[in-house]
Length: 267
Ligand SMILES: C[S@@+](CC[C@H](N)C(=O)[O-])C[C@H]1O[C@@H](n2cnc3c(N)ncnc32)[C@H](O)[C@@H]1O
Image (tube, rainbow, N blue to C red; front, top):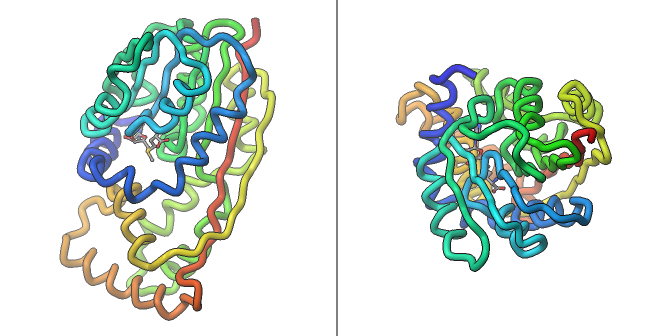
């Protein structure tokens, strides 16, 4: 990953770090289900890659109470939120490491468990990212991933696809981000892991146009790139208008698709 790309994503998440928990609160259940799916065991040393504000680590502490957790994220703002949420838990030592997945400042082969919750979809090099995550594990160590699944957010994508001038960056993001079960399995196998389980979860959600657009601002703000504030405001006014027209009595309705994976490093 180029350092430019890494810093654009990191700055985007730093700008929205303090709004993250409020905008994405309905999503906490996904991180909890990921943690519930990890095989029972003793995990003393854990790494949370793309740790963000620490929901997944919080669920992990509740279930496994590991001795040591390292939170890795390129975003300084997210690491600050992570520290505020997780420091001071009795018997759990928290270490923060600023960096992207391909350049994690941690030693290879030192973790019993690596988790990566709702971050893998933002990694621009999925093969290299899977290999980098696998490298952190001890033999027998477990990798647990939750990310955006292919096919979700179709209603939003359809609105973008029918607005002119065409916003190729935002439209292209769906293909860059979403993945399906066989693709995930290939990444993990190529990284030398034994795949224990890969599955997809699909829901329909009803929300307000405002809440949906706010979530997009918070989780995908970095996709704005070098578009001017005025251009983005004008474009978003059109998007919101189309979303209101497409909304029904239960509000704005969309599919939300999540891809989960559990894999293990051979002993
Ligand atoms: C949507 S948040 C998810 C945070 C948290 N894991 C959760 O479950 O809520 C995505 C996180 O991935 C981080 N991230 C984005 N690109 C990354 C990269 N290349 N390497 C590591 N982390 C990255 C972001 O900074 C952000 O904190």
